[in-house]
Length: 276
Image (cartoon, rainbow, N blue to C red; front, top):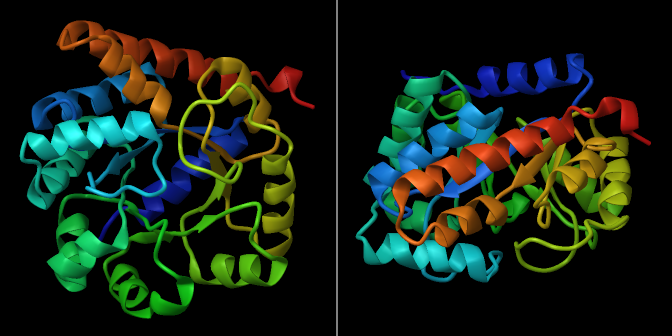
């Protein structure tokens, strides 16, 4: 049986903690702007300083995602991206860098593809796990059974509205890390991450020692530094996607912009002397 890279994910988060910083986690959709271009973008993010990358599985109705990622998903879908391309993206990005790569996806594509098949192929590709923002924990037993068998992390999403009892249920069922949505709403860059995120991390940590990584809204080094002061990882997606969109088809410019942003954010999460 092929096993995934959940241990690599854990080691990466542990190493960041030992260096007194948060891990930098970048999100980029597969197939955007093309399959090959998406793989290059992920490598650029790693080259710039990202520790972990989430590969988005483009979806026609991405309810959690804001307009920037919706635009990227639409480009990828119109380009004909398939789950096989997502697996190829994971495989080539991981093999080129040796770093942990996860998939972030809504449940419907997995359900239609087949849980066992999806898990097996993700493990064979060298994936570290899967982030499942819309899979209720109480309906996740089948997924978690296969994921655990194949050495993949199951990352659930918590929000400021999550009650303490639910937080405990989620952290008990999840593995790898917990994805803490910094505020209610969809993904996208924001002027301020806000205090809700710190409070959510605090409440989540009461329930478990599993790492807590924060996403939704982080777009620059100052915000990364703010989140790094209380979270184990800083997740950035829309800002990376926007850099590629702003390049307007110039692949070299887009890749340079992704690498530059990753370097800025990586510096942000390392500014430990300025932590509160």
